[in-house]
Length: 451
Image (tube, rainbow, N blue to C red; front, side):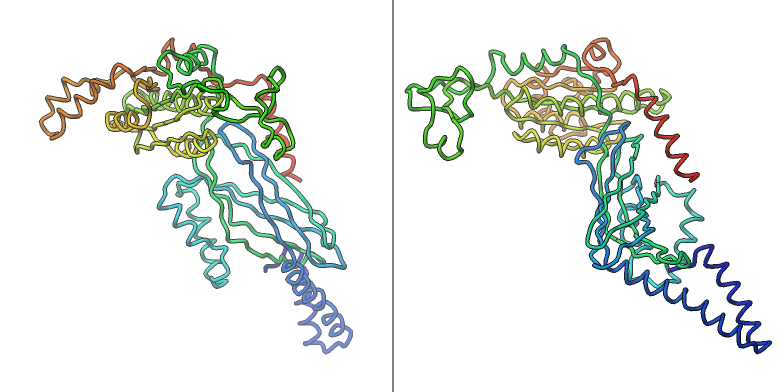
């Protein structure tokens, strides 16, 4: 709890009246001072009792990407019956994390927890404001106002956030405050719970050139196919009835269970696998050009993974090779999208990525003969030359790795970011009304801040 500016003025006036009543011994001033103490005490007790009856929860979109506006929704519920509450403010915080150790530290030593004393929290807030410019955390604070919350009901309020960069963000801790009913004292209750969200790379546009390549993989002659059923009673799967299906293929027992016609599927299925690897190479001497290419490679991977589930029905393996090597594989498209977006959000370019190690791991996860697409921010390096790898005397397994690499090289499809071939497959998304939307968003934010 703390006093509002109006509360400080009220307290100064009350102090003058109290001092005058004591020095002059005027009964009317004593009565007036006693009457002025009542609003402070009532504001203090009513604010605490009202806040204890409130519950607030935050709701975020399931999937977030850079250069997009996200809608954050707050739901505040008033469980106290009999009277509505006014003038509630939700204080939310969004922090972009750049270091895992500092992330854990910010969660554990958060000044909003109840276990700390008031002087520790006050001193911690002062140090935090002084060191805010030196911190490597990008922090934004939001104040969301609720005019009225009726008794026994809930109110929904939302605000919009523009994520300019990908990465890992921390939401919270949040606080719910009110100056109800007299506006003299701010009563605040903290929600120390935090939530981590991942903002993936920007989504671009895939051209038909890339789609034709993927479809040729899925329907090529080397595709892993199931054998056709030899008898009419054998089938591979059940699916809903479509216009043109024969009534002889209806599976009546399953149709009765689901309440709709279900037919037996006898045709062949294509289960071609898909493999994609990102080579996030960063050169310190090119003025940041390679890092921009690495960002475009991440955007390409995010766009391709979201749309690959419509064509490929087999194993999907995605490798990210940068400062750390991450590998995701699954036959479930939704599961792959969630895990890959997390890896792409926190991926960092590196001067010497271990692409040979990642390449050999990726080959083991897909079927034999599956092409491996490598999206790189540089031309094909010499480290993929088996002859040079054999001359490396420091590696005890150089010969074995070189033999395995010789079998993998014919399957590589190297795509360099910035080349003509890459530009014919992918471009960054540029909506015609995006700049106007951002200007409108910034103007509304400025107007709300002034108000």
